Image (cartoon, rainbow, N blue to C red; front, side):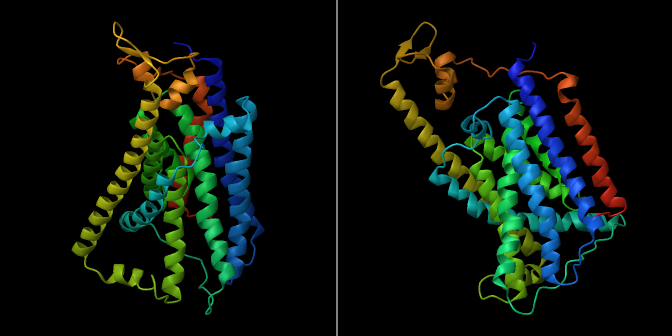
Length: 365
């Protein structure tokens, strides 16, 4: 089955968007590396990070992808946002904020295990971040939250779980999309220390986006996870009453107690995801019932007939495809040609090579 022209355009748009991300990261790391700004103090280190983070996030992950999706996809601004799963915000999406904390706790375990495994292979972990100032500086804290939590949550999710996932769903089912987005997000970081746990997070974020049909839960989870990283670093360094002993507790707890903590966090995480999906399903069922009040039923073909002019987009919005088209309805899948995905494959090879490069030489880190 040949792909429709609009889907070919979307695959090209995704290819160019990923190129913006991958090549943008490489360009900015080279730029910051050769500019060699002074980073002897914590403030100077933040300034160097800002030189990398602001253009990378706002330009290569957000502005350029938005323009590509809009102009190459021939969409309006609203259609571009909807294509990237940025529709109306629902209150139950806020369950994703505590989910972010759960993900942070689980990430500590996963990243620690991954780092330990890397060390066993001879990898050397280097940290060049200067110590924080002796006195708390609110401006530094806000700058860290902005660069570490807010910008990645918005820009990276828009790029990686927005148009990429929307297009992939035309070809892959849920499991395929989750795996694709997970691997892509892990390699996208181009850092051997981050590739494993970011792949797992990318898969979770893709699952949330698919099941809620919205980018906001993934954004909030991403923000919650990254914010916790910044907050507990500051809380530990300045011995805050709330959170100041978090890392000390983790470091002083026995291995088996930590296993129980991580298992409990996993159970809580599953419960939060189930709660989000439950409240979403209640809303979907309520909307369906409102439509069914004025609908007719075709007993011969066992399907619902909605009154008024037929609107496929409305049927999709109501998630009534099986009711309207029949119980055997299955979303049509399209197989892209090698030409459609050759740029995506090439970028995957590039990110794999740069990730291996960071393992062997540790360049840029």
